[in-house]
Image (cartoon, rainbow, N blue to C red):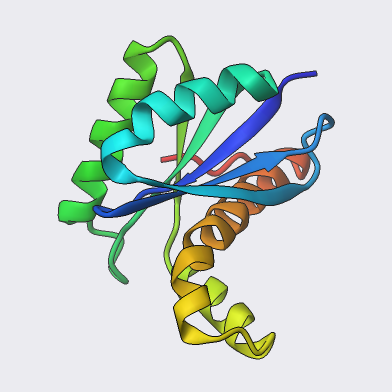
Length: 140
């Protein structure tokens, strides 16, 4: 079975997470500079046999899309052009949830910056996987 790759888009860094082979659980993978994201995502997808890329779509409280959502959609378009299937999911509050989890674990601020994006990617991907297994896929 193919794996899923989760993506937390940011203008400076992009967090990546990967699912298990059954598509039930997500785990943080790595953080890459935004300028290298497309090439790295394509490489990671090939390395892990991931055919579906789940990109978090940043929206406001009202659900409206802003500049960050445009960047995430542009990344998704580039990944689609590279032959990958892309799904978008609402990522409201995922970075905050990741930051809170790292704070609770006692991680120092300088270490959190390098970790929060891949944790957020895992939260995005786990949300997608949970919706998928419950029969309620929640793409945008």
